[in-house]
Length: 387
Ligand code: C5P
Image 1 (cartoon, rainbow, N blue to C red):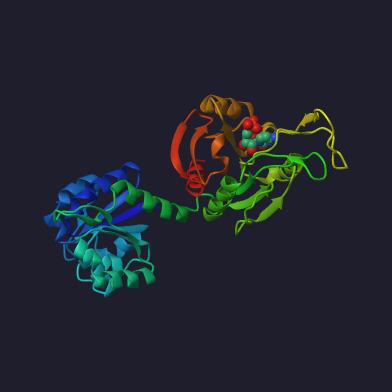
Image 2: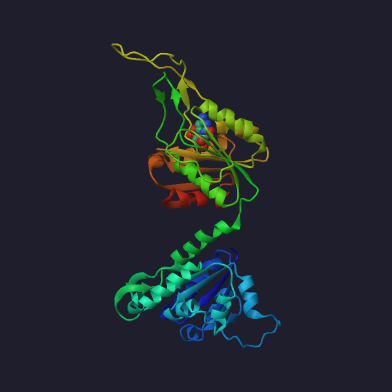
């Protein structure tokens, strides 16, 4: 998503679109704006022209210096259209096939995703005609950003307020980044879950890792176009749809062997598994019987998969995780250097079993980005687009 076409219709919230344009511009998107005639009574085209650094379109019949069929070239140029605010009127027009101005004509000629960020008086918002129009448009693939509840221009607090500008930008980015295929043709190896190190036929040493983060990374990477090999320790999760290889292992040694076999042909490794650092030195073929007094289990070191990859790496990008209970950033940076990584994700070990997490993305060049608490699916996304 590079080119965003913003359609502004004539609701009081039109003044807020200046903020949306400014936020999107700061993020590096190209913006063009079409306003309805009514919207120009609320905010001037000059404001939006200055913020978008492009000419604002209002009138279909303006002199066209390029001799292009302008409504078609704008529809082609856009990767996505955002109508903010979207009034009762514009939803009604598009739902009924009316194209009587520049904005509705461009929408009707556009095959890209179109978002309506709704904003209007609560009675209009609750009008069943609007609901029917939205239902119809949704069936044709149009997307809607619901209004929030809040103080409305008509002096009451109710549903109808344009969604917060930051949230609109987030929704647009989150939905549409997937279209970028930024990981197309990349071969990714992801390790996930815990390992189990057997003591005897019924007992093992392990940890609390659920595998959710690694599986979320695999799913998101597939959506971004990557070819994903998932090497997983035991979890309760289902094989993600679309992985090109799904290898289930139990022990750290098995995970090590499977990783090393594939490592030379991989572009990016994300080591998300909580690999046991130690394993029992002696495996008892029989179940260990209980006796009086203490029982000693001698532990041996497991191979460090990521450390070994760091030694062998040529062109590969290596990403590790640091789950810590103290000195989060310092410990993560030490690990990043010791294991020769390109990036490390630092997080609090207590979040291992939760559905959400908050992380720091730390890169080898010193860049540190804090990502506040989000679902692991959303975090997967943040991690992948930062590679
Ligand atoms: O040094 P520490 O084990 O805390 O480092 C964590 C990172 O190293 C994680 O990315 C984990 O997947 C990886 N790791 C590994 N092999 C091990 C232990 C950890 O690949 N034996």
